[in-house]
Length: 177
Ligand code: FAD
Image (cartoon, rainbow, N blue to C red; front, side, top):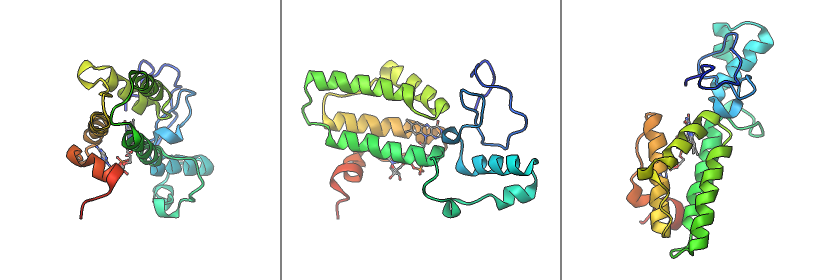
């Protein structure tokens, strides 16, 4: 992540952050932009005053994290993809021109408001590229477009690509036997 002042002018210089902690626009560590483990390491450091290997080793795991904490970058991402793919699953087969305009506008606004700023920046860039412009003329087109957009993030993160011919089974109809 490019955390330079040029890339993110509002961010103040960190003192000493554990790897994986990303700063927010206020210059403070941003939970929804950082991995849960990294954020907890930072939190433990702040409480203890120093980063020691004992603090890092003792950082809570996903299993020991209470479920009612603000989301980290992974949890936010999973919930958001669930919403986005579910929206494509309930999208009409033949959407009106007005709905297509509203949906395009929703995606542009979503890309500006997504709480992980560096994820949002990349997503805005992605949808602004002509070859990646949202395809909204039918449910299948929109579902496949969303799948491809999700795959672009998967590739960026070094994850396996999803087979987009199966988007509807995953998000609408359920798996065939
Ligand atoms: P997720 O990637 O969240 O996927 C959830 C489920 O969706 C999977 O279990 C699978 O069943 C299904 N799935 C997977 N791929 C596809 C696909 N292509 N089409 C349909 N279904 C699929 N995280 C970062 O660290 N850096 C980023 O820059 C970043 N950008 C993001 C941008 C957006 C718009 C969003 C919504 C999230 C972003 N994330 C980013 C979060 C990241 O994509 C993951 O959500 C997070 O890492 C958790 O991943 P996961 O492996 O649990 O599954």
